[in-house]
Image 1: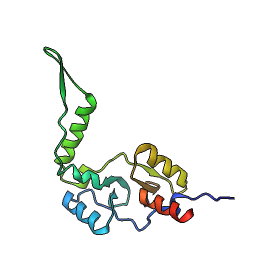
Image 2: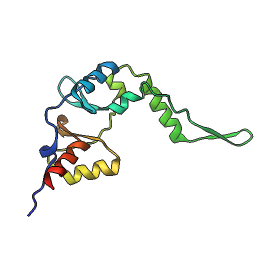
Image 3: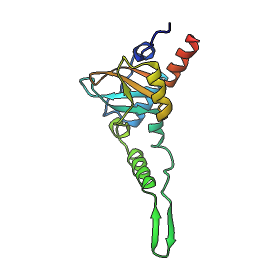
Image 4: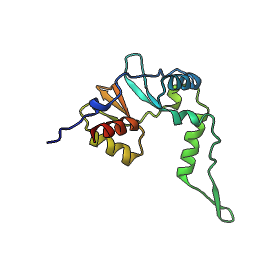
Length: 156
């Protein structure tokens, strides 16, 4: 009989966190120094405000994707609303001065009792690289894709 494995069993509990007022260069230093790809941004009480991933930092240095406008007929132009929204988000991040500006305020999270199956499904279906494990709004761990791969390697 196979037993359930929970998020708390595979998470990294030695959690590195970021402050909302840290600059992008400070955030880059923290991620690089600790060899991690993401960290929760937390307030003074430890409440999670968002998740900041290494790819969120890349936009501060990247060439922005300017939306394409298509002329359908003379005087009638169309620009995809999704492209405009993406450009607005990229522009906001490119001008970011703090971790709070760069972070994703809507981030993937689970309770410690979530199963590895729940985590794997969330990561696969949502193209998610990191999931914060929370109890009462406070981060107690983080699960990266690599954590799940290491777990699968050990359990097979």
